[in-house]
Length: 182
Image (cartoon, rainbow, N blue to C red; front, side, top):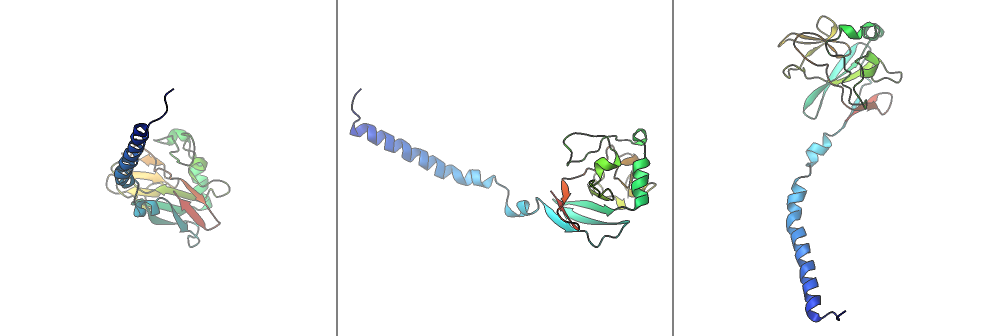
C-alpha cells in the first residue's frame, strides 16, 4: 500500500469542507420546516374545570377549534349508558385516547377511571363543520341548527345528517380540577 501524499490530504480536507458547506447552506431550509412557537404552544392546553358545576359545560379553543368540556349529571350518565348500540348512527367511539376503534359505549367516550361524568370532545359537527349548540336538541346534548344534527350527552350522533360522533381528543386529568388536552 502506498504512503498517503500531500495531495490525498488536500482531497480529504476539501471534501470535508464541502460537506460542512452543504450542511451549513441547507440548515435554514431544514429549520424552516419545524413548527413555529405559536403552533407548539397550542399543541396542548390545560383547563381548570373547578368552576363547572354538575350539568354545566364550557367551550375552550384548542388548535383553532372549539372543544366542549361537560360535567354531566348522574341522570345524563345513566341515560347515556342505557342507550343500546343498535340505536346509534355511528357505533364507533372515535376516542383518540383508545388504541383501537371500540364501540361507542358511554364509558369509552368519557374520562373514565371514576370520572364518567366528564366528557371532552371536539365541538365541530361532523356533517359540514358547524359548531353545535350545547345542552340542546332531542337528546339533551348538542344540536347543530345549520342542518339539524342531534347529539346525545356523550357526543354520539343520534339524528340528522352528521355521519360520525363528535371526536374525542387526547386528554387526561392532571389533577382533580385540571384537564390537559393534547
